Amino acid sequence: MKYTGKEIVSKVRMHIKKRGGIDSNWFVGASAEPRKTLFEMHSVRKKGDYWILARARSTATAQKVKLFLATKAGMTLISEPAGKADFVYAYRKNRQTRA
Image (cartoon, rainbow, N blue to C red; front, side, top):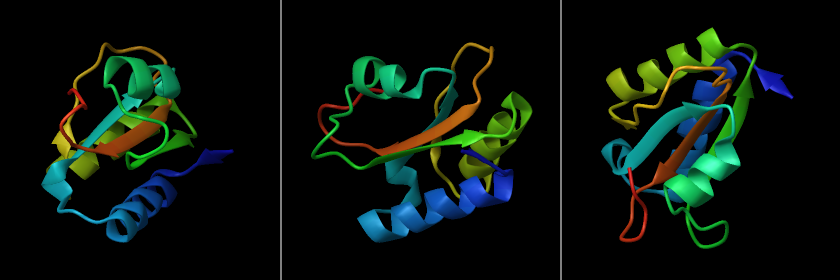
């Protein structure tokens, strides 16, 4: 399912509130392959770590959401190569995760 920017922001904010931690302890990024990015590139564990992903209606929407969450909510922004990055993902930092 594809979500609007407002829907994604709401989903991510609710997830952070439910899972705990301050916003700056969370990374936010956009990717065309979010599971590969989360689990391989950032070393997020499927079970045991806190993470969320949502598909945006467009790449432009995903980029806007990523920037909004980083600048307005104080999450840590992850820079990635441009492309068809239409998924927004976020995860909470811990010892084994990488930016």
